[in-house]
Structure formats: C-alpha cells, structure tokens
Length: 205
Length: 98
Image 1 (spheres, each protein chain N blue to C red):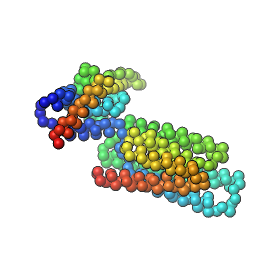
Image 2: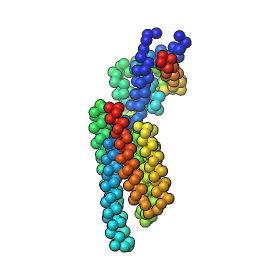
Image 3: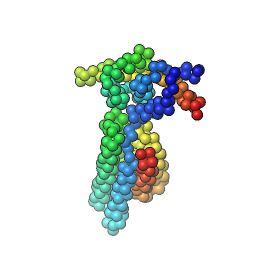
C-alpha cells in the first residue's frame, strides 16, 4: 500500500462533517454588537422608567411605560439580528460559503423553537399584567435556545447558553433587579463571549 | 501489516470518503447537496454513490417534489459501522507513526 497522508484524510473528514452539519459563519463581532445594543437599550429603559418616579404608577402611565419597554426591546432585538445577518453574510462571502443552506435552516429552526415559546409565553403573561420575572424568563428561554442551537453551529455557544440560564435563575431569586440582570445577561455576557470568539477567529485566520 | 487490515479499500477515495463523512452526521442528504459540498460533477458523484450502494453502505430513497425527482441518500447501519472502523484504523496508524 502506498504511503498516504492520513492526517490530511482525517482532517478532510472532519472538515466535511462540520461543513455539512454546522453553520460556521457566526462571528464574535455580532455578539459584541448585540451586547452593546442591549446595554444602550437597558440604559434607555432605566432613564425613562426609573428616573422619573414622580409619575406614580397608575393604569395609564403603566400602559405607556409598557409600550415604551416593548418598543425598546423590539429595537434591540431587531438591531442585533440585522447586525448578525449582515456580518454572517460578509463572512460567508469571504470564505466562499453558501449562507442559506440546510445547516442554516436547521440552526434557525432549533434556535427559534425555545425562543418563540418563551417569547409568546412572556407576551401572554404581560398581557395579563404579570410583569414580574419577565427578565428572568427572557434570559432562561434565550439560554435554552442557545444550548439547543449549539448542536448545529460552533460548539462553544453552548457555554454562553449555560451562562444565560444561570443568570436567569439567579435573576428570579432577586425580584426588582430584573433590569440589572437583563443588562448583565444580554449586554455584558454577549460582549464577553463575542470578544473571546473574536480573538479566536483572529488567531485562526 | 495487520494495522492496514481495517483500512477499507472502498473508502480509499476522496469522493467516497466525502460522501460517507457527510452521511455520518446527516440523516438524509439529497444529490444536489452532496454535489455542492463535494464539488464534483454529476457523473462522477453518481458512479461513487453506485459503488457505495452496491456494498450496502448507503440506501437510496427516490421521490418527487413538484414532479422533479428528488433522491435522498442515507448511510446504512453497515455503512456507519464500516466507516467508523476505517476512521479508527486511520487514527491508529497516525498514533503509531508518532
């Protein structure tokens, strides 16, 4: 039998397995940006809701506050998703990979199932004026979505998921500090994880 | 050379090795997707699939989507077992060399 490069063969196998089953165009930069948007969003919420406590809670100010928070949240989510899509598209183009294929669809589906479940649940609770635990639930369901999606993308995202779940559970123990935990989970954790990922990308590039 | 006993001749080709690698981690894959991932011509891919099918390493399922033929491929239990043996053998060889 001729001498062959078995190392090459093994690395070809690994490469194909990853490329055919995992979405690899995620970038740490998208995580950092999502964290920054979340911190800005949390700062807005803090200034608008907690600084002018003069307007003591009644039904009408409450529904106005409620609308403000929902718009704030939607903006943070929209900007984060848009940034992630743009950065992923650019990265995929640079590496000459197709972006909308089976691995992408599988990743999105598995990410969205826990996330949409949690999102709908939280909206129902909010509609019934149960405002408590919203931040904790967001963190927990988002963490579960990340853990679930990690099978279909870079494995390390699982640890970000664990961290979000833990943050959510601790948040549930301390009612009244939801905004702070939310800012930590969606802001600080994203920035930390995104930076670690970004450093790794630069190293391997 | 007992080490090379488990090296499977059938997997000793880039395309066939590639097909099996993909089928190990995906339940079903269609022809188009295999072609995309492996960057080979239709005829080339078809002949390698045929060889693996003959050995009972993969199963073929033909169906139609919008009247267009859609053929799905999946690794059989035998195929997965043989491929695992092949990978183990490769790793063993690398280990002994070092």
